[in-house]
Image 1: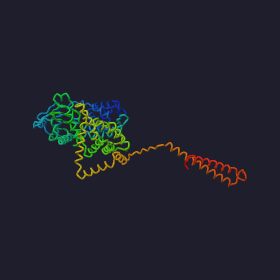
Image 2: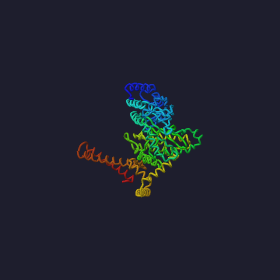
Image 3: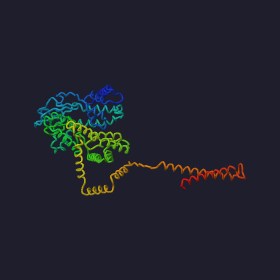
Image 4: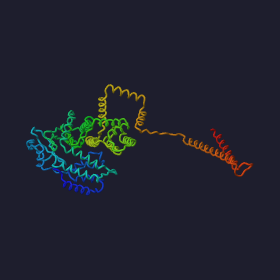
Length: 528
């Protein structure tokens, strides 16, 4: 179904009406009212809000926190509608593919709903079916929002957020979530990366039964990871679950470079002593270069090397305008002193990443989308850890994991020749140059060296300079008197005494007295 001009016109009126109802005349200033407006506009806008809630790089923290409270409040579609969609997509009667298909959905969301079914080969599966016309409606709504961007401003604590940038990001994310074949590929790739991890459950996806609007995968019956009471009743060790969850998540980030970007409790189950992810619609990807720069940042933080931290962030980020390098380095240093100046065990990794995003934003540097997703995901994982084991912090596992991973990566890249070069450079620099000298050189090369000069006994020096200048001026005056008096006498004008002009005599006398006084003052000072 193509959204015609009448839908667009009526929907535009509805959108404007709802936003005006929630008090948005010129700017959107209240995150709570923003969330309520999205809920009033229905499932497609709820999904828009859910997508935005994963992007702390383009929306401020207070908006992100409020959008987490979005409620779908959607009714399930009539089974006959779902049946028609499945049969149309698979081009077969539903009974030929699934001898058993539960009419009542297991779960309902804004874009889809999930039904329990059984294949001919007796596999119990979950069938995710896209709601009718939801793709066309969502893209039409985004198109309308795009037209409204010149009139929309999201305002937070005085900061104006670029609405056009938000809508563009939204459009890209929506297209991916609306293509279930993309999610199928995500599942397969994730399974391949984690096939050797014994405590991770594998979620099989069935390509032969899947299309861009229908996704068939194994049904995992388990306990939600935040259902602490149920987990304890089943005899699970909560600390063990927390450690395994976090260790695997760091593996996804630093080894695989491919991580689940929406690890909220509803998407993680514990089943048969294994941890299983569901819903792979949103994934993050970090290429090798990006992972290398993240490692450099963490190494810089561990070694208190502000220069390395700042440079690695600059390599990761995208410049969106002029960048004041001195200010940027200063902001990174302030952030370090505030959040990383304590012992390693006190680090708050999600908070650090959130602060880095803020520092970058204030310095015209944009972070890649996947880095922003990583920051949001780490916040979610940290929240889960707090429920599973209140004494555990992300950094408790990150520190040994990242340290061992960095060593392994470095060893992979260093052959015997490079090892000798590295050893020679290391010994040479440590023998010949102290760390302070190396730091001085780094600052000089980066154009950030500051020179502090201290002058001692400045008052005496200035006083002496004043006396010298005064004497020089006095001497010039004496010389001027002599020259001017000579000119008067030579002109032979004015009143005379003994045939000598009086003015000339007075000038000579004044010059003599002044010169004699100047000579005495110099002799008294003892400095000729």
